[in-house]
Image 1 (cartoon, protein in one colour):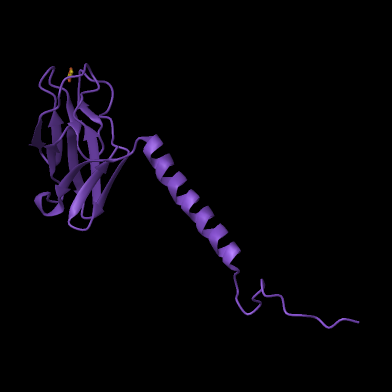
Image 2 (cartoon, rainbow, N blue to C red):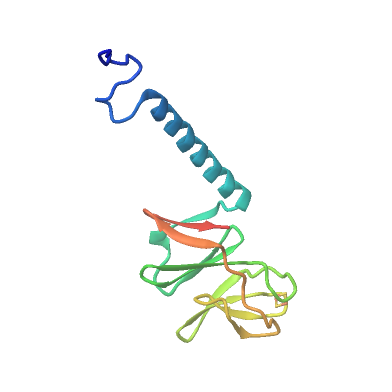
Length: 144
Ligand code: FES
């Protein structure tokens, strides 16, 4: 009977062979790249940023084609300034009692900035929301 010889290619004391490690790195790199590619293909990107300190609770502002509002301390909403009625540009924010309102000057539709809902026509449709709005440090980022 021959005695078992140690295999120089094998390092049983290592939890992971070099080949397995490299294979894992390749898989992880491919997964990361495909994740980035999927995000890019989905067309989502940060399209506007605001300084969180500039937006008081209950307030709203218009920036870079978006109505950005802060209905609650940690709640942010964003809607396109393209009016859902006939493509006018929503361009002003006003108060109506306790409600903050976005106004389209083309036919004077009014929208609730907290929900996007129509408060006054002729628009029958609500404002179109951004895909995502989130706070990132001191900034509020709108993703679409
Ligand atoms: S296009 Fe905005 S109210 Fe008509």
